[in-house]
Image (tube, rainbow, N blue to C red; front, side, top):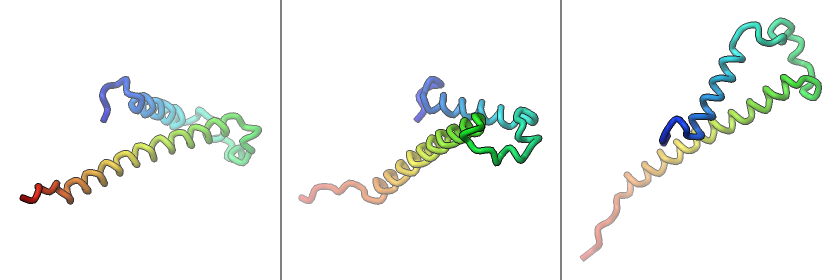
Length: 89
């Protein structure tokens, strides 16, 4: 559950959207004009290292969010499929 716009999840998702918006703007990166640049090793290309790091961080964030929802769904299913038993008299 998101409590407010100051929630860490909201902040992370907003940062992700800022990055995606920047990356989506045509002409921001030379690799768009020189496709051969994608073959430059990450050790030489700082832009590629940064992209790999951000990809890893954001993938982990979204997989984590997915897992949280998945766990809640499973717990809800378990609770609804096994109602509490009344004591035997």
